[in-house]
Image (cartoon, rainbow, N blue to C red):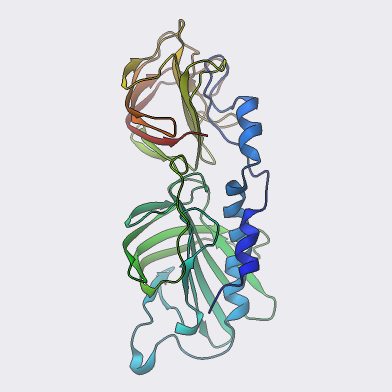
Length: 361
């Protein structure tokens, strides 16, 4: 089954999308972004991609693959696309399977299929972006991160369709691609999907033991050198993996430096390095040039808001830049940040194992 080109082209439409968390400027609490940064990134067509695919790909599976039949190929052989949904075995009907490049989307990959039992269809959709080859990628991330989203769709062909989608936590699941060459794509996946818009059923859909080994069609669009990012760390021992990332080669006043801000639906991480233009290890500094680390998201509770960002002279930490070019900055972070004044947090936040690979806007 081929996905209609008009469905794929719609991914380029603009959308405001949700606001980010994180802060790349010392004077403002973590969880906010510089207005100039917000404005420039909100209009990015790539940010609209997850929202569009969430509303089209699952419905495409349910609408195009109705009818009876079982989910096995001739002689009971596998279709090459299997998983468990809430512990129940699922296998895509061969006629329902699509594995192809998404035209015009850098590193865009789409894998979908559906199983029909009686009058009920269940579909799985995995939409990826910024993919350049085999590797492990996060599900539940925005289109400025290496990875994508996972979805589950259920319906009976009579307009009674419901969808579930990986939330913007950055940690909703993973996909490991083991082969992406020679006209084939293969790998494994798992994710937890939450109810989508207008879902009348509720609950979650937990997808486990996912496997695929499929014919792959189309040519994957090249990923520009500055497109795609990943930022992760342990916040007090809990994994933080950014849903969205925005990086600039400038300080908060537009001078030489480097900054990034990241977020998930509940948390954020940002850094600001004034005057930094070369690899090296830099410590938090509250005097010029300002170098700060902030964490949290405004509006969150004491576990999610807010720390650092220049709010306390007791903040300690280091940012090590291992590579810096006009298109990408890589490095590591460690820090102990004090609660920001006037915010719910009451105890310091210890950040360990922080790593970043940030494309520059």
